[in-house]
Image 1 (cartoon, rainbow, N blue to C red):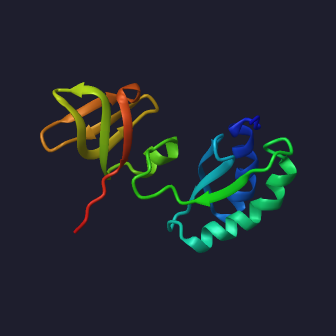
Image 2 (cartoon, one colour):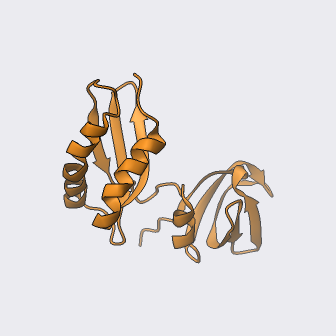
Image 3 (cartoon, rainbow, N blue to C red):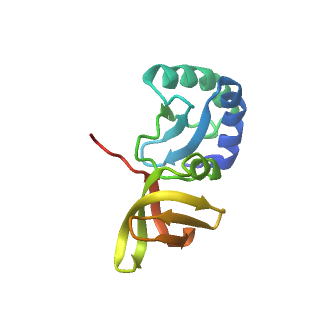
Length: 152
């Protein structure tokens, strides 16, 4: 199905999200199920009420934008989840000096999975302080980076 560019849809939705104190983390299109999913976050996290409130706020305006050129689709609004990958500069910046999990495309010093503190980010590389050393890793070597999830 033909859909408008996701960057255009995202920019449109961000204009509604900003004044509501909501950050649009990602926008995805699933061609097979004809679903447009908007992932959101707030300073205090996301609950079902926040998702519903934002869904109701964008439902009519996004229909006017007509992202699918008059074809039927389902609109979903969701939390990106605890283990969501970092995608934006803001994701990296808000997680500086916090514990993260890093999965690499290829082994670095024999490991494809690393845990440590994210101590630096410059848009091209991250600096990760592990128990043993501090590593500078190019982002194009990183398959996924997300918050470390610890269960007590």
